[in-house]
Length: 308
Image (cartoon, rainbow, N blue to C red; front, side, top):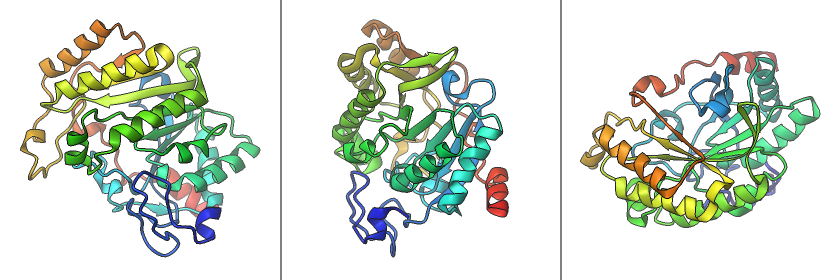
């Protein structure tokens, strides 16, 4: 539990500013102060400079401050999956992933547990954790929370989902998404500086992910233009085509289909027109449910829970 929460200070870690006393109740994120992890694994489906040959040591945290209507990880975003871990167990999990050969520790949807994660990482580093730490987020962050991570996180892997406030309100209930995400990414770049690689693997830097939504090519172009105009080659942009429609999209019929090849090509062509060079693109049919992690596979969590 964080010092802030232990002292009874109301939670303000994310832009929702729900001010819940998470010692006793769940915040907007759906979680109390008790860290819960839905899955830990060697994940091979991240960007090549993150996954490498052995995989990224992903730790999927339960709950989410954003909760998009099309979320592919909704079973954990809504708090339906998760194993409670003590700080000692979370520290052990980070070290276990390193021992299993992970190229990095990849913290997925970690915002609402940031103080607890920082404490566990600090302990793990004192015990020999030496691989890079990746902060994998929706991009809906406050600068205040990100500054807790300075010197602890090596690579930031944020989404930049929307340029339009109307879209972010409709699909994520967050009309202020652009305002927060733009400031957050600027802070991430300030902390890490120009991307640095060790061979094919990133050691420090920022990779911004943008998943193109069906029917919203115009907004995707606006996102790319903003990022390139503001940051040029100081970050990488990952342009994703893997949108997979959830089974129940009642009320959002426009999101009930996959992205067409032509839609994705229009966005990639626009990136080339801008002059964007530091980019990752996806090829082939990546919009498959097989890309959604199996949250029933808890091998590493069981090992930590049973022995620590």
